[in-house]
Length: 114
Image (cartoon, rainbow, N blue to C red):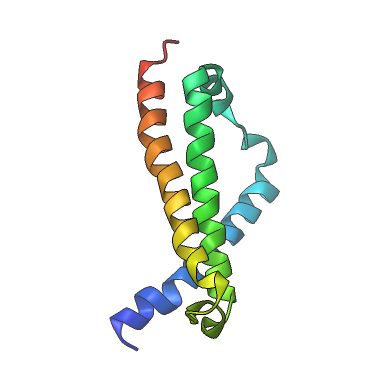
């Protein structure tokens, strides 16, 4: 097994399993340590917009990759398929949400007074 196969073939699955099992074990053992302290950051209107843009972009990228991995290559690679333009449009919209939301949220978080 080459390093390429390990990094791009096995590692994503190992990381996913570790994430899911670690989250499950932490939730099972320490349920009351899970909390969302970020709600105070959403009090600023700019932060609310930036956070929502960033998270919509991240979710779009995640589900775009998920659908791309589940669809057969022949479905979206055909030039006559209307799905062939969908990945590039989806990637552009998700990336723009992330690239606009991340700096804006960092700026809004750094200028928020407590």
